[in-house]
Length: 306
Image 1 (cartoon, rainbow, N blue to C red):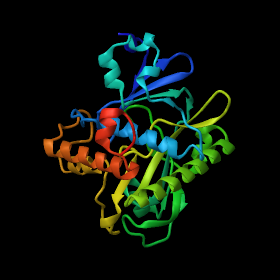
Image 2 (image 1 turned 90 degrees about the vertical axis):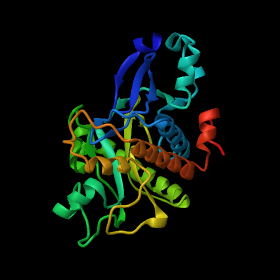
Image 3 (image 1 turned 45 degrees about the vertical axis):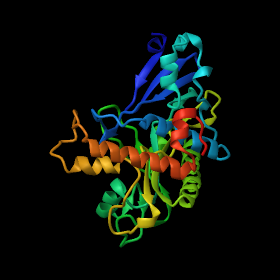
Image 4 (image 1 turned 180 degrees about the vertical axis):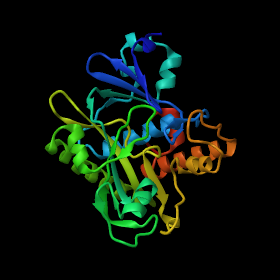
């Protein structure tokens, strides 16, 4: 089919297709990954939840940094790409983003407002995270004095991402000024996201961003933004430092996997029905609380509205 002929590559969740010389079609699947392994069990509508939330955040943050999104309407795709196939167009609806093609920077731009996950492990071992020295005596899930930029190197497929310091970011992107722009944009985006989430009764504990450069040198926010796949969302109403938190993200899946006799190498185990249902419910709740919109309406009308 025409779409297959434009295929570029598949990531853990998204499939990418070339559209002309300067655009990419990103299609978010329902695949679930954890510990850098794609699990065999999909989560129904997950791709649409990620896409809807990303579209919301792109609209909310254009004053901070420009982004790659051009359209989320399948009708805007060239007929040569879709063949006008109504089944394909319906499947793309709500899960596609047509974006500007960029040179992707090889850095995961993580910002943390709370100490958790790999950051908590680093802090326990060294008293710092990615070169950021932190006060002594912090507990798991404690709020940090201020958000910190804790980047990671985007390792090749089959390898785990590696936490790095800012000096390594400069080396990877090849320019100190660009590295500073990326860091400052990431911190500003996190601050905006944390404020929006706080009004929804959600704590944005940490999140990661990706950036790319246009041939002109313009920096763009790309891929997905502040979704349950790329963030830790905690329920503010039950937040209590000193322990792990109830979350609206893939931590629910990670916790189940940690209890299994699995080496964290492919293939991953099948997820049981209650874990699938619980994950889907958490993702939908994150979408609805953050956007203030109905996910059922997004599914039926492809609009982010009540």
